Image (cartoon, rainbow, N blue to C red):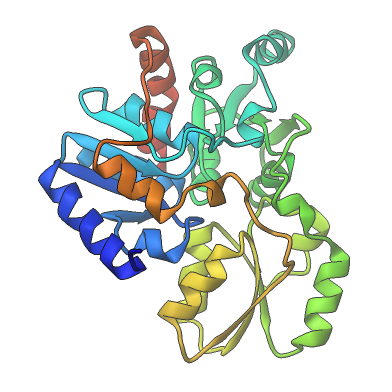
Length: 306
């Protein structure tokens, strides 16, 4: 029998001993965030990955995030904490379909949400995340944008950049699609004084009802900095837990109890422990041709996003 605190202490000791940097996405549970070197959304983690001084990197998140780390830091040994942690949205498009779309729209810049596989990134022009999408699309020197794969995020970006022409592919996040206008109505009736904060992966009709739309880190920053005391959170429900720890004087409610990413929830603190002691996880490898081609659109993201 071992307690959470004992396990965390051992993870912290082992990661130092074995020169491991732990990256944790904001959708991970709070006990994992407490042992991580860096936490945040995809954009923040992608910037930290290459900077980390450690020679080994453990991604507590999903597969495309670990692939991004390997793309940016090929000299490092990169592990995914739970090999089963994928992303349904990242797998909605394949290279063949996107190649066909590009042939039919040769004058469009292909903007890929970072929630895509490394193979798909090899034929995209630039990546974006929810926190960087608007800025990057504005900075692209083309007024025709083919946005993949999340049409809800794409529609939100289009609203912010009306001067450009957009085409979309029908795709999106199954977790955020679980939230409906009925959930909004019920939550607002139950908590009339609460501000509604949602992720742009939500349906447009849900986002339309929000007081704030932004990335996970954006939502957390808004809640922490706001003078309001009650918030309905329209993104993965682990964010509620993190905010409860960081803002104990405020109240947070889920927009839907079903907004849970089962892939993110696969990773446990014991998975992290097994990884740092060399008894678990999956090493992520990419062939050099795929890595370099995928890196081009990520480099463009980092350049245009600064």
